[in-house]
Image (cartoon, rainbow, N blue to C red; front, side, top):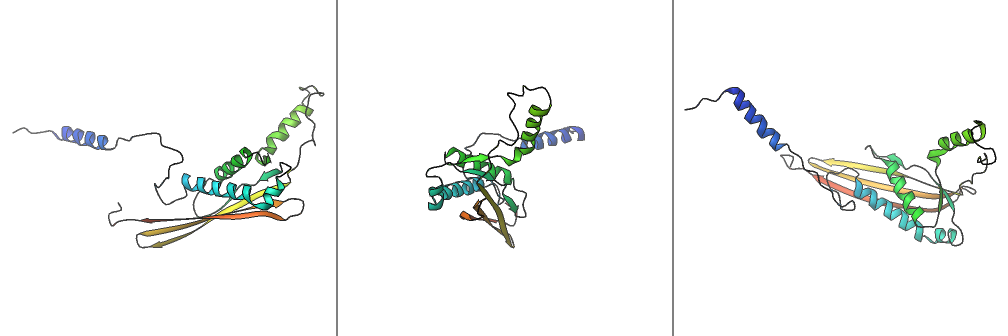
Length: 199
């Protein structure tokens, strides 16, 4: 009968644990439905963005606005009114990109105003740029419309079941008149049930 030392047993046990903890990484389709957990995820972002862009581009009032012109939009960052940490900048970016790619709108990026101001100040006041080629202050075009919205949620729990209802609301405002030219919302509901063992 062979007596195994505690160090060898410990090494074997550690090797088995480490072997069981190996991870596997693989590429997946970015549009595939993601159901890792109940929180707001990539599938939700894509569904919300698609719904809002399709609705906006096909609403009669917006179709009239874009019939003979490409209105200039300022897109305000989506407000997160949920209890989760959600990257609303990513939602805003996706909606803006899809609208820009439609060819119906032009955009002003308000998130870069400070960087633009610094560049214009450099061109006009540093003495390093030929004044004849420097872009002058006060020549930028202002936005005609503002697109804004918020994401809210209601969370309910009952024992091992959790239910989350998300609602995304967006509006398009005429900055000159203050009139709302378009509004819509997208609702999502997700439910998760856990077994006694948490599996």
